[in-house]
Amino acid sequence: MKKSKNRSLLFLLVFLIMIFIAFSTISVEARKNHRMKSRSPKNQKQRRRSDNSGNAPGPAPAPAPYYGSYPSHSTIFDILSFGAKGDGISDDSKAFQAAWKAACRVPSATVEIPSEFRFLIRPITLQGPCMPHLVLQIDGTLLAPPQISAWSKSSLFQWINFKWVHNFTIQGTGTVDGQGSAWWSLSQVNYIQKRSKYIPDIKPTALRFYASYDVTVRDITIVNSPQCHLKFDSSGRVKINNITISSPETSPNTDGIHLQNTRDVEIQHSNIGCGDDCVSIQTGCSNIHIHHSNCGPGHGISVGGLGKDRSVACVSSIVVENINIQNTLYGVRIKTWQVENSQSYLKLALLLI
Ligand SMILES: *[C@@H]1O[C@H](CO)[C@@H](O)[C@H](O)[C@H]1NC(C)=O
Ligand SMILES: *[C@@H]1O[C@H](CO)[C@@H](O)[C@H](O)[C@H]1NC(C)=O
Image 1 (cartoon, rainbow, N blue to C red):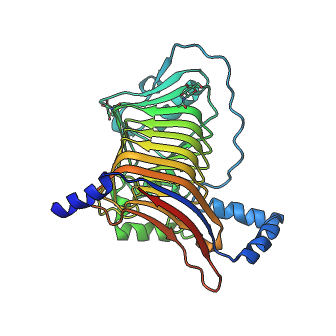
Image 2: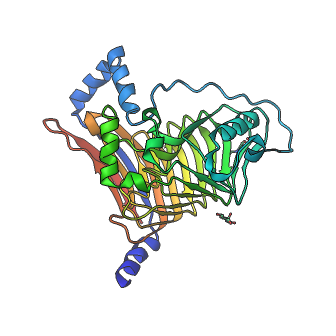
Image 3: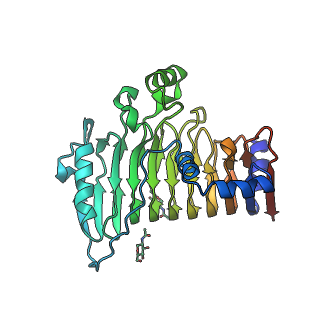
């Protein structure tokens, strides 16, 4: 108790850290070389592929969002009126998808997941661009399929995938439950790897945003993801406020929030406790501000691993302050991959007040 108190005090007082980090796995000369080479189409293709490793295939540039004029009143699209049962057993994916599609066309619309109902949702993609001010109001519970066999090979990347959404808010007092416990046991994992031997080591992320901008996630609770709970990929202008993320300390690789190739993120007033990093900041992220939040149990807040497979990784302007870190394996750390037979260099400016 005393130990953890001391530790949290250490991080509690004032914890401001600024990291400007440029990481390359090759020497300066080699770097110039690489820059030239990377202009060739072959290399670009390879780079694109490596950028997207571990993610859904086939990214295309997001179409420009349509911002028409919009009225101030909001329109409610209740999932129940689209045929959802809300009994926790029936598959309500189609109703969810239909409610989303209808709301997407209307400015200031709200997709309502009503309280006291439990909706079983299979892996789905909720796609934009939609009209501005779209809200997903989660007051009830969204449940992922608990059996691994319910996930098809192509759906292993994530459970709920938000793609190309702009000016979008998720809020409410409800819960997003990944029901991931089956994914955490070794025998089950072996079973998946045997079944999908071409995409090893993949387990679904609960909520994933891809190529999305001006996104707010607030108040909701996300629990027991098979792997990562909330992920932003190739996105920007993200606000996370007052959310709770929870999975057992013993659940493997269950990151809280995972940021990749994403800019301008603020995470505040949130409680994150899970089996891996509370927040993981990956390649291509900049201007990330994490403050007034609790982390633990978990592996702390981490930057990286950067530079896997000799890739050039760049992360900049990370500010972490007023974080209460308790019962974690690490505090804040930077992970890099070691590369044999090449000169690596790491430029790092670290400011601790
Ligand atoms: C959506 O756009 C409006 C007007 O620009 C802004 O006030 C609001 O904060 C935006 N919502 C989100 C979630 O970014
Ligand atoms: C935080 O979220 C909870 C619901 O999970 C809500 O009851 C509470 O009012 C929110 N707090 C703030 C300050 O918005």
